Image 1 (cartoon, rainbow, N blue to C red):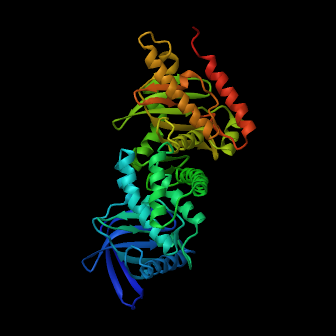
Image 2 (image 1 turned 90 degrees about the horizontal axis):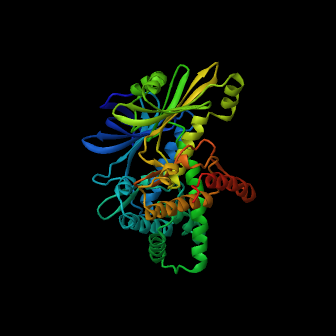
Image 3 (image 1 turned 30 degrees about the vertical axis):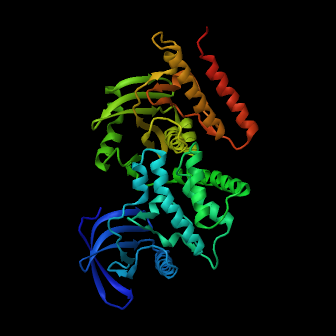
Length: 455
């Protein structure tokens, strides 16, 4: 990892041919193997530096970025001003652009907003800016809130390398596809805010928003939600702003950055078995071993999937480990706003390149198993009725996305103050075909009904 401040010497290619010295103060973002983005100073001026590190595509990425910035300027779209570009001492291409000060990233502001009204208030100016870009024949290929800066009276767009420029304003279909990318940040249950977002966009384009437009928008929204989940799951398997991939010897894993520091996690992986034995054992079966563990002041649950012989390890290596599946399933449900313990890490211990043991680490959730809750004489009928309604809503969400749990017994649902939480996602599956989903759903419901208390 580089020490800061980091001094970069950039030999300008345009404009001019001088050599400029840039002082990088911190790393803002990295896309492994492609680029790094730095907060920097140049001639006492605050700037942003993008360094393109891909050996084969770096020049192409630079050209796309620079041309995109110039096109945005030409069309009057709010974006950082490009200053110069060139090559660093080690031959990497870099572009320097102005820094928009006192302008937080929209995604950070959105994450802090609690109420639907607050979220809508943040999205409306972005919606108007988006409508203006579409009128100017500009479309974003990777539209997300991380690519917008919120100044007092302006919204600035970032990452022009991921934009398309057309010769005429965007059609209704392309426009509503872009709007759907923005609307997916609102909950699917927030029909009123989503409707206001559509009205705001249509008003900015001087369009009427009719029934065919609504149907087209809803179709695009559903498609974007599915694509968003797929992209999100891919990000969960590599080093990113949120996750860190660690590998040492025969042990490798992915950790949530908020949960770990690299050195701590190496110790955690090496000491995992001893930590689990010292912790509070929650389950010790033939397939897995579960323990509640304290680590660095955090209360977590570690689930170890046991080694069951060479053939089993071979199958787990080919099909991918159960811990990896659990990691992805946890993030998947999180993206769908279905409550489940937050996955914090997963890692694998290998021998001869085969998965020998795998481990899934999740947050510890305080709650009562549904099996015990329904048999607790201190729980009133009204409380039971409320929880049953919430569980019905949870199951309806699973059904909407054609997801079967695979082991829907009452001990795998925790009743918490915030509502029911679904656990043990090992056998979870998504189904493309309705008739297959109906078979699995029938098994889930039969499993669930089996544990209902008899009156």
